Length: 342
Figure (cartoon, rainbow, N blue to C red):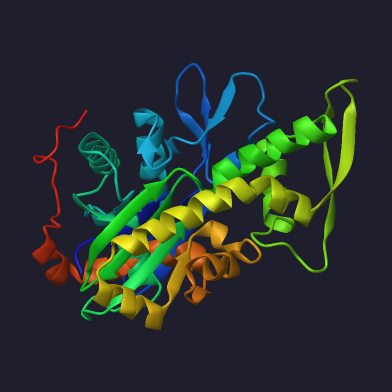
């Protein structure tokens, strides 16, 4: 084999890279620590993630990809270059890449993403929508004409789509996802308890006690931060059902959008979905009761895919092997000549 084929999920919260025959080989936070003067990256991935909020002078930590779009071209290119080299090591052959993109990304956002990946060392890039990759990674057979409903709840966006015969019939993207949940928890702690917490703490609260439906046996967590009145370190005890009440409007946005998407599907696809159910993927699928939330709202059984946070990356790897099918729907590898490299 000359060179590598890579499947890349460039998410707001995580970057994952898969290789056909090997599976997922990289799964790290998509955070970068860089020098403010030179704009050269110092750390990428997990080490930069833990440095956020603790940066020394002259160093900044950012997420160069937010809500599925590139926010810092140079830093994003360096980050992708770092992780591609981590996989291909000293190979002289540039890899072909299938990368995931938000379902409703604009043409400018798509061209920028292709440009970043090619500048980072890829030979050619094919963009495939996230819900389609999530469906492949969750076990949906692209050769079958039956309908499937996939909801991918990530860090920056929630992509949902009705899939049939290896393509999307109905699709929608919401910016109600993990980061919005963190912001709402931070606001709740400030307004109710007068405690200012960092994004890492908000994420820990979400991961440990947040729930999409109220728990019968509630759980409690001590949340630490800075007291707004005294300016000193402070703490408050928060319950999981409190966080459920805090996040309820955001959960309502997700279920309303899912219901609207089902209403737009054809009767035959709706019948298929009634049989197959709703597939939930993405990092936020780990929230307690998220499957019950959609079951209650849609009246259709819902299931969380195994290793849900890696479904999109695994689906990109499957898409590499199914390009002869995707080619029928206009998916093509683009080279340096096809996009204007910045």
